[in-house]
Length: 484
Image (tube, rainbow, N blue to C red; front, top):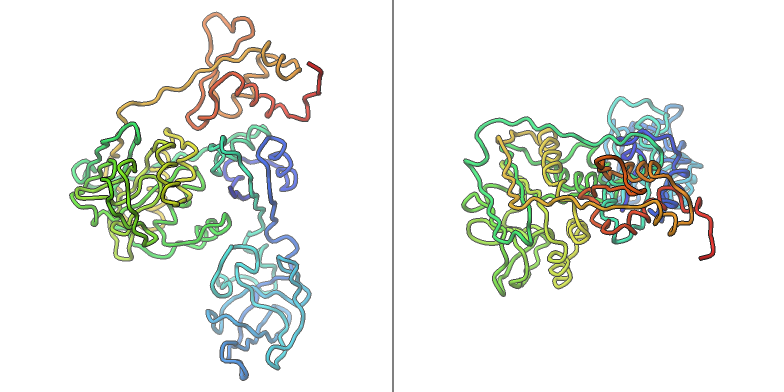
């Protein structure tokens, strides 16, 4: 799981430096495998203007650029093809050291002097992949460090999460941990969706035939969207966490996936025959073409999302080519659901088909996040793709799950950890990670505390799990070794 410093700070206003946060996360059980400081040591990468772009006389695939770096004009040979005269670009000046310890030197390329390099986002550590050099927005001051003027300095944390912590497969989940360790308030997104037009129930329907495999399925209808490229902020945010941009609608679903940890899927509503969604098991031997253009042979144990005729998605794993978002798509049905982890794991393993969505459903998504993620995505789609959201939500949830209640005792905690913690301190630690304290009638009896476990923590099943959380939050380094 990858999160960035800036994204975390949108939800928790903490003061820890990247190095401090990396250490604190690791000590709290969320091991940081890699810390990458984006923009550090890159002040020699500056805003520059292309005064002239001409073909290299000795190489068809190279261009010869006359560049104004704010102090002087320099000549740079470039291998990209997406730039033109007048563009603002990121110029790595002679002496700059790029990620990967790549030092920029004055050199001759096919016989002509090149004093610097015009950089791509990949070369600057802003994206895993990129095409062409980075073209900057107009109006930026020449000669100023690119990362400073664009506010791109950041830190990227790659976390090695254990399978029992699905709650941290999101920026909000990690932010909750940062809130607990820093004492700073967690600010959760509270999306508001502007609705208009007819009620969704008059246009679409959802039927769940297998409620044990799909306990909850919700959908919204968004009409009149315009499919196109995503704005730069959305592209950069996705690339910073290792995802590539596809189009504005699909990018929003991926953004919410990373932000809230809940997978979503967008269907072209015009391609849903009968205007309905049916969640059912596949027919034995049924063929289905997924978004990667592969024909999958399904079994009756596989859960599928169908329209009025046949399958349009492999539930929780991947959508189908027959309902994907296209450039001409105008109306979309947005899916947010909860699927049985064992069912998703079984199908994903058998087909050898793994996705960011299946990764989260296999470990246990948050059933209470279904409407939150749906509304968050709908609001963002309105922002980046336009359109109107039909009134109402189709939210089929036949048997709402009740929250698990667990009891922890100070005596048992002391016996396991070897440290004395008051009941109030234990309650404070558990409340910090989202557990609700259940107030007993007449006070807490005999050092016992009862808590309601939130739906995003399916791993908390017994008292010993709570004691482990207390140890983790109090600090493993604060627990002194004792003989039994």
